[in-house]
Amino acid sequence: MAIKKFAVGCYDDEAVLFPAVDKVRNSGYKLHDVYTPFPVHGLDKALGHKDTDLHVAGFIYGITGTSTAVGFMSWIFTSDWPINFGGKPHFSLPAFIPITFELTVLFAAVGMVLTFCYLNQIMPGVKKHVFHPRQTDDLFVIALEIGEHTSEQEAIDFLKSTGAMETSVQIAESEWWYGRFDKEEEYEKLNPAV
Amino acid sequence: MNERFELPARLRNTSLALMAVGVLVLIIGAVSLLGGDHHEQTRFWIVLLQNSVFFVMVVTASVFIQAAASLAQGGWIVAYKRIPEAIGANVWVLGIIAAVVLLFVAFGLDLGGHNPIYHWVHPEGDKILEGKSGFLNKGMFAGFTIVTIGLWAFFGRKFRSLSLAQENAPKNSTKIYWTMFKWSAGFLLVYALTQMSTTPWMWIMSIDAHWYSTMFSWYTFASAFVSGMSLILLFTVSLKNHGHLELVTKEHIHDLGKFMFAFSVFWTYVWFAQYMLIWYSNIPEETTYFKIRQQGPYSLIWYSVFIINFIMPILVLMSRPSKRNYFTISFMAMAIIFGHWLDFYIMTMPGPLGEHWSLGWYELGIFAGFIGLIMFVVYRTLTKASLVPQNHPLLKEAILHES
Image 1 (cartoon, rainbow over the protein chains, first blue to last red):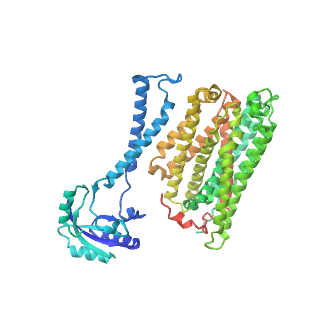
Image 2 (cartoon, rainbow over the protein chains, first blue to last red):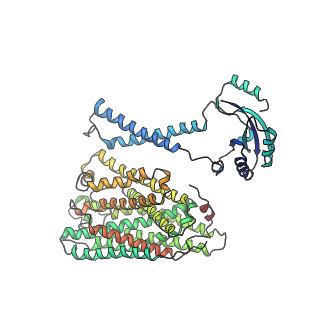
Image 3 (cartoon, rainbow over the protein chains, first blue to last red):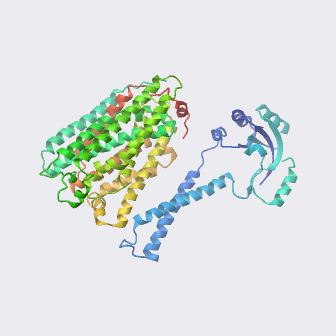
């Protein structure tokens, strides 16, 4: 949780956004994030994001589901409460497979959804600062972090030179927070422009 | 980008050598096995039947892949489109071999008054077979075999000729693209009514004529599809190794690998569903099929099939780097083709041969012969046209493809 100062530039065209992202990455300014109203193909590569490890997490969740199902059913049917089903052996693996499969899928799916939410900081009730109301509508927004030694005006001029149609300087919370009204009122006082 | 493929001498010699091995083994087999007792004569024919049926299904999967991609308007296949086309255009070669073997086995094979492979040829005195004789009889068998193979071969050649006609069509014309779309819909119908439902009952399931499974055709389709994908991948990698197909990148290879992975899992799903229902209900007339395969003399092959076709793909192909590595993906493609060949082996052998199976020079020699034949005819077809379908409306999409 940290209040920081941002220079914000808004773009109305992907064709302008991609060169702008390149220029920002080469300029030495610290890029906070880019907000787009829809998934833009190739933007993750332009931003230099690494491949996610979400699938490794998914594999681990899946394996956990498999072992939970096999272990739990083996324990129940062999030692806890053995019942004779149609003369089959107590430990009959083929009968366990469907449930094992389902639990593997369930664990992997639910675990990956939660991990995805955690990595992207999205959850019911989790709030993040919105740099421009139209960033979920029709504008692409680039937010640069401005430190103590960076000139606001230079950053704004730089964003304008990359083709930003609208710019602003905002003081805002850089991380997520769990939404509460009293906290938000306090926060809005800090930054009345938004 | 007019890429012409010249068959390198090494590839030609390899395929000719494999074919020569096959022919040699066939001749030695004909001399030594056909001169032997009933068991050896049966072995001679059932191995030919297993291989010809397996490989005709594998090459026809390429026709299905083209049809499915065309109907889904998938663009990425265009980058290596010539390969499924060339495989599909040669369905007739394997189809003729399969038709000759199947029809001979059904009509000509007679060992002392009974047919060792298709018992239903003489249903007299067997109530179950008499009850099935409305479907399982020589006339239906010949009809299904000829119609199925004829349609598969026809559509394989049709797709190839449509695709070549696209090259001579006016620039940006989509007329042939939509013609292909309609023919693809027709082929899916044909394929659903043959490979996915009826024909494997006739060709393979009727070897164990008393036993039946409604999942059987779907299960052989899964085998054929995953092996067909692996075959396409092997040809793609081989052409890339010879400096062709620049448009095919790791993205395309990755997606082919995803198909191999996904359909290996799908095969296991169907394989296990068939097994589990029979295991659960435990009806003697159904369980005999698995008794000899899983617990009897075939258990070694049974578990090898499971390991090669499921455990290996799921562990090796799951990770992204292994699907993008030419060595691991080609190795897995070869393993999958061999694994599904073994799967067909275990479908066909226990019926006629009983407990005395052998996997020796004859079986592997015929396998090598078919591989050589497929390599030879497909490479020969690939040399006849540019490897890049440069007039295809979706070519740009294929080039830009990212998995």
